Figure 1 (cartoon, one colour):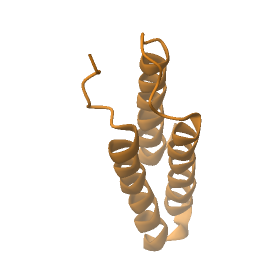
Figure 2 (cartoon, helix red, strand yellow):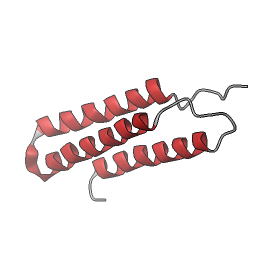
Figure 3 (cartoon, one colour):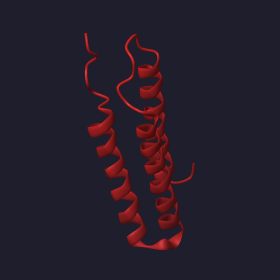
Figure 4 (tube, rainbow, N blue to C red):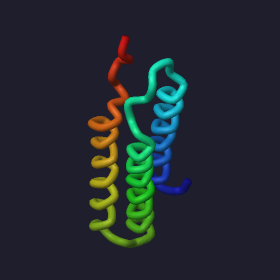
Length: 89
């Protein structure tokens, strides 16, 4: 945990874990698939990879790619997994 990208992507991943655990222990069946969580987790991994390449001297392009993937991952989580929706019932 050396770069800001490490901290940001681990925080997003921790949020995904909490969301998954919350939804999997609910009374109603989950409305999302495991593949949705896999896609968001892969987004975290890819963003961290490019971010670490940028910090190691890769240049501005890697920073831009890392930030774009982080924003895309957060948008995916917001649109597909919808963590802020109230439970049904």
